[in-house]
Image (cartoon, rainbow, N blue to C red; front, side, top):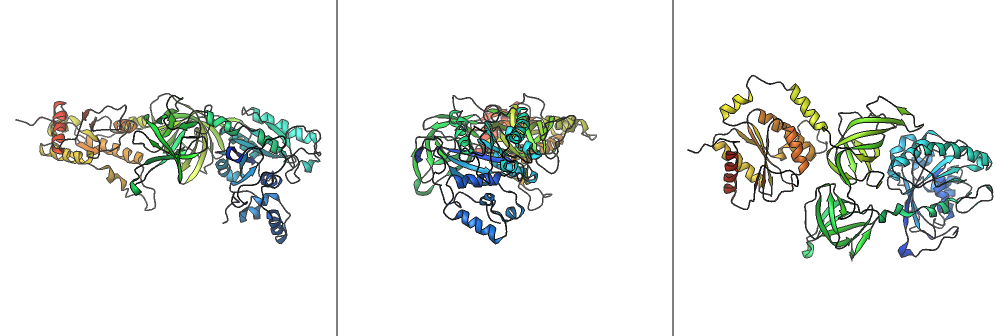
Length: 624
C-alpha cells in the first residue's frame, strides 16, 4: 500500500503563493508553523478543499496537476483535487479518505501543516490521530446535504480535545446556486449545536472547494458574504494558542547515554509541548517530584543551544544526575505544577468494538506515560450526534461520548483540559487497538481505590483452614511477614543472605526474585511481557499467601517508588510489609521501617538487619 502524499512528495518546502490579503512577508528564519486539522462528514469535500488550497497557494511542483489529470483520464474518472491527497489506492477506488494525510502549505505570513482527517464513521480513530496535534480546525459541511451525523461527531471531538479555534466551511455552494438562504440554514443549525458544546466558531465561510470560491480570495459568486476567505482565516488563527507563553511542559520520551570518544553525556530527549526553557533553569519532574538543573540544550548533529521553545524536539543534560522512571514530565521550577493523581474525571469518546466496562483493565497512554487504567464510574453518557443524555448506564458503548471517573495503577502527571489542553489528552488501548480518546477534566480527591476495594472483597471471601495464624506463629516462633529490601545494586544479594541467615536461626523463610515473575506459563509465546505493575501485583498476592502460611517472605526491589510501596502494602494485607532501605533509595514519602547506610560487608549489613528485626520482635532472639 502506498503512503499518503507527504511534504517531500509535494516537492519539499513550497514557494509562497496565492493572494497576500494584506499579510506581511515573514523571513524564513522566523517563520511560524501552525497545525490545522480538516474534519467533517464523509464526502463533504475535505480532501478537495486541501487539494485546492495546495493548488491556489502555489504549493504543487510543476506538472503535479497534469499528472493527476492524466491519472483520471486513464481511469475514466473526472478530475478531482482530492486525488492530490487521497493517494492510497483503496481510497481512490472508494472515494473516501482512510488515513490522515498530511501536507504543507504556506502563505506570506506562516507555514501550515494540514491534516486531512477521514470523515467515515469507521475511521474516527484516524480522525482523532490528526486532531490530537492540531491547534485549529476547519470543519467542512456540504451545503446541499446539510449537517450530518459525523458533522456533529467531529464537532464534539474537536471540542473534547480542546481545540478552541474552529472555522466552519459550508462547501459545495455551487450546488445550491450560491444561495445565501441555504448558507444561513446550515449556519444557524450548526451554530446552535456548537453553542451547546461551548464552542464559538471564528467564522462560517461559504465556499466551493472544487471551483475555488472563497478559498484564497473573496469571490464575486457570493457578493452577500463579506467575511474572510479560507486563506485569510488560516492567517487569522493565533499560532499555538500562545503555547510558548504557558508553563513549561516536556514529556521525557527517552534517555540516551553516549560513550564513544569519551562522551559521557546522559541526554533526556523529548518534544516541548508548551513554554520555554533556558540553560541554567531549575526543573522539576512529575509525578516523581525530583529536581535538577539544565546544563545544556542539545540537538542532533548541531552545537548546543542556550534555550528552546514549544514545538521543538530537543535533548537536555542535567546538572545533577537523577533516576527518572518512564512517563515523567519535565517542568520549570517556580511555574504552576501539573496535577498528579491516579484518579480523575475525564471526557472520552469510545471507539472500541467491545464496550468499556468496569472491572476490565485497559492501557492508558498520556504523553509518554503508560499505565493500566480502569473504569470506576460512568457519570453521564451523551449521544455525540444530538447531545441527548443517557442515564443509568455503567458501561460505554461504541461511539458513546461519556464523562467518567478513571483510575490508574500508578499516579500520572497531567494538566486539566481548561489549563493546558495538549497535556490533558490521552488515548486508551484495549488489547492492540486504540479504543478511546479523551481529555482529563480534573483530578479527583482521595477515595478508597479500586485495589483497596478488591482486597476488602478478597478478605471477606477468604476461606480459612483449621490452623489459625496464631497457632502457626507459636510453632514457628514468629508471624508471617512480607520483607522487602530496597536500595542500591546490593539489595538482591542482601535479600538472599538474609533468607539464609534467618533459615539458620530456625525461621520459616523464603526468598523470591521478582525476575521469576516474568515467566507467565499461561501466556502464549507472542504475548507482551508482563509490565512492572503486573509483576508487583502478582508479587503482592504471593506475599499475602506466603505470609498467611506463616513464612517470612523476602524479596528485593531496586528502584522502588512510593506508590509501589503503597500497592504492595495493600495487596499483602492484613500482614505487615517490612521495608528495609539500604543506602540510597528513590523513596520520598514512604519511610522504611529500617534504614541502613550500607557500604559495609554484606555479612555485617545482614547482621545489622537481624538485630533490628529481633529488637522489633519480628523474629525471635535465639541467642543464649
